[in-house]
Length: 173
Image 1: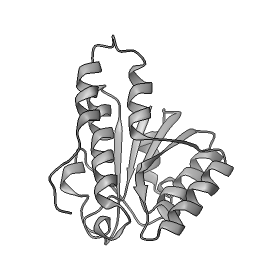
Image 2 (image 1 turned 30 degrees about the vertical axis):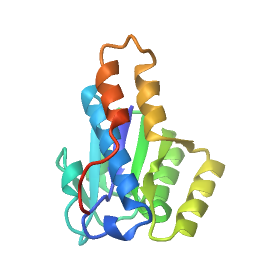
Image 3 (image 1 turned 45 degrees about the horizontal axis):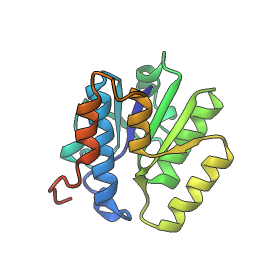
């Protein structure tokens, strides 16, 4: 499983619906992947600034295309993986176009719906519906975390549980 965090950038994140929830849930998901030694890729849309500080865990792939699959560097990074979890903004633009392109390439794509948003709730909701119709599996950050460990006896269960319990990052975005 490979986590893709799309365009969670300083200039845009404060403008999307429910940005603090999206930031917290994405932070939890990134850290769960780190705890479990699973790959995380981050993208940045050129001209929108840097990824928010709390989510800067790896060197981002800079892109101009809306779909990450239109960026050669991104495609190189994800080759060799078949299963992806997507998070990011905006749901109806870069996240959806990436998801739809990944499905065309035969990848297994999950959308962590609580880790994504748009400036407009309507745009987000319509995009989520369209992705479901196209075969993207909708889930949540917490569901992904528990699915990855599958058992309370997992050696990293306590670490994941601490992430799940986290209720605030105390960040101003």
